[in-house]
Image (cartoon, rainbow, N blue to C red; front, top):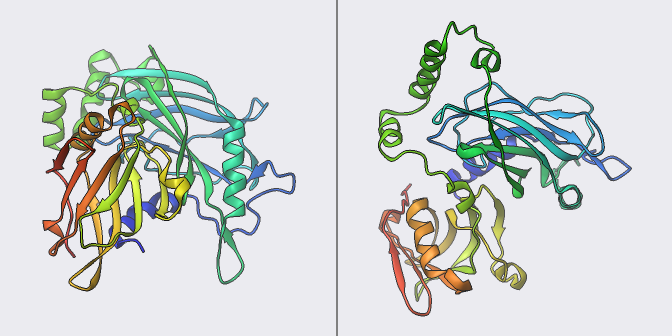
Length: 345
């Protein structure tokens, strides 16, 4: 079971792609019903100038929606366009040009994508599709998302009810005429700079603008998101832990984490961005949703999980939920996470 808030956040990306179709895969087993979408981190607005997922072995593909200012969060899809044939080949290449408003910098990248991995995920998504009462189905994976970030970071996720990163790369800095890139007739550099500054003001809060001015851009952060650790969620003595559901800082989520699955317990995982679970407090089942401060949590994992050390993320469930405490520990040391948020409802 998933708390309403996490369910709404989790389903937002999946809803971009829902078709309710019984024909998610072609008979030849290599064409699927899928859409393209885009993503960028909070606090650092981006825009895609042009992007295309190229079908395997072809010089044509599905374009990535472009032109809008992006800042919804890393791994959170923004939009999609229903174009072309219903069933499409999967991509093996990505070409993309984008702009980072915070840096005033254009980037361009052309990347090979892991086609066989993408194909395997889509096939599995059809095999494990959700079946509705009317007989229609919704596969696990029915979208491909391109993420762009400052410094030229580029990620690709296979998206849907489960979301998995399949690629991470580095685009190169390029010079472009802002008038041509934004399709706006700027008279001079000052006019272009004023437009860029206005986009930042329109997108960011005053606090975010001040933080950007004071602290700058944490270049390399999106690569840091990808570090994986040997960790396991647990609860303090006297409490139960059920239906653990995790979203990760690298944009991935897998749905319910079945705690009895020994294979999953042995997998290395990124740092969590939020976790929901069910525990029993005062003989009552209670749903918890914990939001983490990414910098505090990553620092704790980097310290205690170094050198492949096993670490445990321990929750002490309380009522009201805002009093819940969380710590990360290994065999030698413990760190209390003080910046967590657990809303009561």
